[in-house]
Image (cartoon, rainbow, N blue to C red; front, top):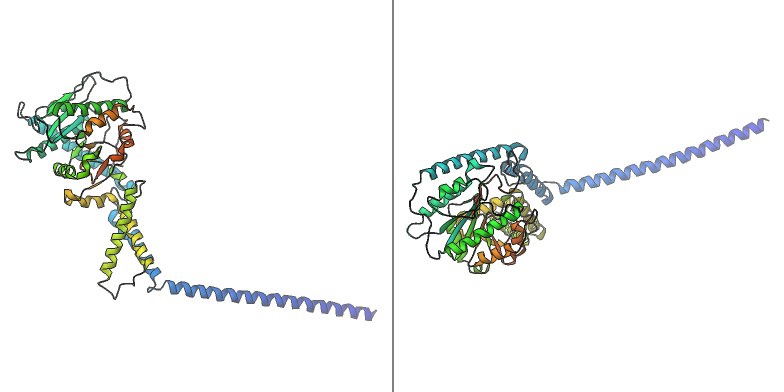
Length: 424
């Protein structure tokens, strides 16, 4: 009996030793794994620290990008209306109210200006035979925004510009009043003291949608411009397109460019919010890349004067600088870069035509008659207004950048207007 118990104890002892051996083997393997993991982490840490030391290009790139796009540009551009950094929730309402208030003051000043004009005075901007340039202003009585007197503001600016032309007139001017409602367009009556006014008549095209009526009014004004004045070139302004101080100089320079004579039309205005580089227009992408290459080359040239601080040239460095300039230009806003071209009319760029909006259009030669025919053959409706019709035939059309006019109208004459119009 004792012999049996002794054997059992011996077996239990051997079993415990075997289990202890397995446990210690597992512990050893676990310790080896931990040591390998720690060693690997130390190696990665050393690599990361080596990469991120100040002398490393990666660190410099990260620091430059964070300081530029995360600190400097937000501080400089958070009030810039057409920048990605513009804080709409903080400034949009205030800016919109300021613009409306300033426009109201300008409208009241223009009203006083035209009330003081002597009735029966010399007709301004009236050239009897085939003027080189005719400016036709299309107007209708606005239900909303009547107190801003947009037409009076536009005509006052043209009147002042024409007075500065001297003995040789810059252009002839025609006002095309397409108001067809029962009420009279009071602003058109006021400017008739100084400018020729043609009227379409009452009750015309009352049974068509507003987009078709807008197109027919535009066609009427184009044809009246040709029949009444027989001009060589026609500029058509809507009554809320305020000409810039150098408007006639810009038009003369554009007309002097050889290819313009074959252009169907030249857009003189495109909404600032749509002028960004990130756009389906191919020429803007090419312009954007070209700006990046030019800017990167200038930076490398500048750094060449400081060899102590200049990194050695490499393709990755050049590509980074190209991307750096491109991203910075887009975030700041292409609109503000275009404004630099206002230094001289010769710096204005003529590019392929863009899609939206017709507040200001230049029709070289006899193209105004052709455009009238194209519009007359189309039917306009919501989503297919006259600007879309023209864009379908824009193979030989162009746009001018920066804008030659300022769009001052906050209230549309063909669309439903909000109670508090916003700039964006």
